Image (cartoon, rainbow over the protein chains, first blue to last red):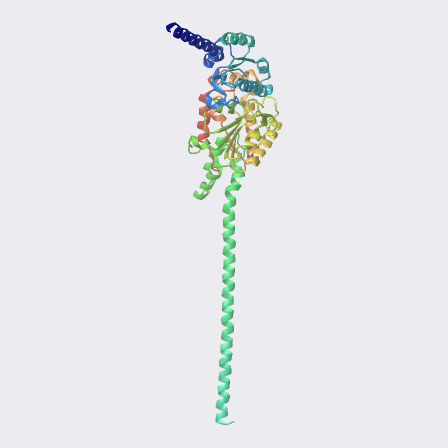
Length: 154
Length: 314
């Protein structure tokens, strides 16, 4: 009897551990990833965090679609530099990804006449989706951003 | 003729005379009444005419002076210093009544910088709409005035604002900024700031022509709103030395043209640039170390402090 209970208990623990492992891959800490990107990559402008109540001015996402997020944009607005990391709610990853792609389009509309040099960064914007995490980096070093995201979202 | 006949004749003559007197009295009484009526009517008409003239002159005086400030003190052509001309306007006038009227008119004069006024609270901006480029976008990015509405797009300028579809709708489509503004009919104050992006490559005449078209559209869209047109802000010395297309003297020149435009379009000119300039007329270096144009929250606070003490009554 004791052996059977132990076996059931161990099965439950293994299942929980597996689920936790999967969950970890899907839900990277948006804040930590964004902060790591901010400190590891070089940006021309100071990067300013976007508060939740103004987020929808830049990203068409709703509370029903995102679990967590952290966004930095060019503080002065003089550059197109941006970092955005979202954790999507179940089944909403595609919607969040669309919102991120839309933001890149908007940046293009903003800078194409204003500071055309910024279009290089915008055209090379890095968007990575892993599990429920969608991340965007607009920076000079797009290759560096991509490899960093690959590491951070393993 | 017998005595009796004589008495009868005399009696008849008396009756006739009396009748004549009565008749005469009646006709002269009617004449007096008629004359009095005529006098009353004449007085009534005269009084009404005088009152109407007085009311007309009262109604005309402030609006005329608002749109056409006194030549001797107010014309932007005469004075390049809006603040100076405002002060002069306020000081002019000989009688207390004239002085009072001059002050009212100078406070609302189109084509002059809106003078300092009693400070309003933040709720003044509840029904305001801020329209502009990346500088205006900072109001929402820095969450400076959360109770107000901002329609801004980095890179927009007077030439593109009417036609470029840059504002996302809830469905994800893009619309022009005027189309987005039309979705806010409740706005009672509209603050416009354009130009920082255009002065480098748009000629002044074309710049003003497009700006004027935009103002016309705004007035048509929001006929009951107070429309404020804000000056282009200065850049740092480093910025102007590195790129003379952004020289502050050029910005001042465009601002003078914008100010004249506000007179023509009958909207209010806000010389917010004065709140940003250092003693040499430049944006302080510490305000914008990155690009010499954009600045952080500290200067947004200065901007709003200026707006709070430069308002007009609708």
